Image (cartoon, rainbow, N blue to C red):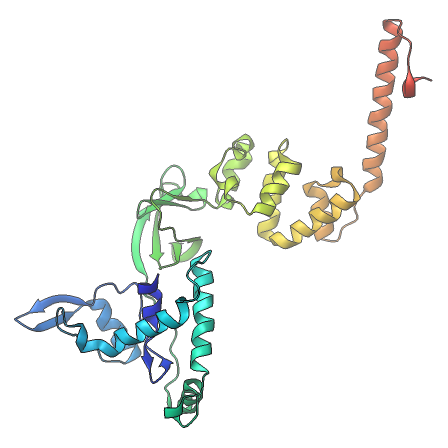
Length: 325
């Protein structure tokens, strides 16, 4: 983590300015002669795009870029000496950003009692406009297998099931995987650095699940749903997976928060009211027929009592309790 993310900041006069892409793992393509080095195509492209010059140090000569290494050590010591454990990379990045802002906001004597951030703000008027981010992704072509997934670095990523057997273009970033078909973005996944991991979006299999709704319960995609949606399935939809598939389509059309709010509203009224049709009625502000449900419950109860009465007469049993007429 430190090697990848802390190297994105170079302490130059207190302001962290240097931009480094972690996709650019190798900068030297080959050695020419005794001391000359030839840059990789990616380094040349980035230098032309952002308009900077690069200089290579010699092999095993870390002292030639001591100010860079010292800057990394400074940030590591100031930011991560007090806290070293984080739940995720995102949390660590947020923490690092806060620490850098704190460091760059401190007044420095050698800057006439100004902070590095103050100096940067003064220089802003003389800087060239910021260009759009350089696309440093790795691009590959992949074929969708019969399970409607593609394989990237030993991991599986799902795509819509109508693309089985087709070739798709994939852009691999440090944190995400983007998948395109005929220049249209059809899927996006968080990149996994595990081995043989399956990243499944259950919405990619809606058409298949409509034909085989029973497969929903044991599917990998269902277990990768949000905890709130998994809880909703377990509590209200285990006996009606087809209705849950319609709920997934509704989430795709609207959003998850709206659906969960509707579920909670129905649950407070009556648990049996939690159905996809009633959720749609709340979201689209349609009238919900509560009376029909209550009438249906009463009719079922009356039919049950009548059946019990017939059995009592058949076996000459005496009714007891609330079943007496």
